Image (cartoon, rainbow, N blue to C red; front, top):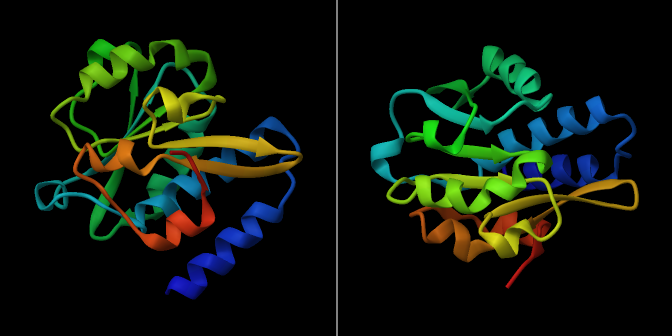
Length: 169
């Protein structure tokens, strides 16, 4: 299983990020693979697996397509769109697109007390509080990981994921 994940993610890392839509599709695949290598607390392992997206983003459509055919463990995936940070409730993942990165402070305040993985898409966001931040290096999609930003929300990150990430201290 670990080898399969490493091979899959390595292949993904070598693909070029051409059009914007391809980037959204690739990020969706990454997000789904992250769910296999992050452990949520026991109380988050039943019911729907909720992936929230703040604001309008083309990734919503890609995540909804994924949700139709995949599960996280035995949990069906539900995608929720939040117009503002005030709407955010308990969710497993919150994705913050580039255009909403200025809201990171209010988003982090809103998820206090929840076991939420914060994923962003703008340089510097791991240092601002995100656990995972997508970056493009040349033409390759990569991701930064700030493990402490995941563990403070009660999440456990696998060593496999750490090995593939650009680690942020």
